[in-house]
Image (tube, rainbow, N blue to C red):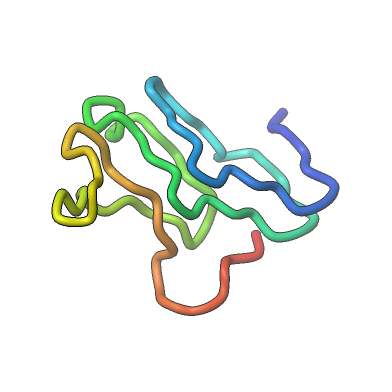
Length: 81
């Protein structure tokens, strides 16, 4: 069974260097992943919460090109899953 988060879950600026699987995770509140990043070689095996996806690094903004960065799938408020 997946992890259960009873309130808001903050993964701000978290770094995932291996597989991350949120497939069965349950969030009672908001899930925040802003600024979180994942090693680009691990990305194909990851499962993110609904409405979250990854984007390439923006080196001009100081982001590491070896990582992909989590972002909401659509612009707007953070997703509630």
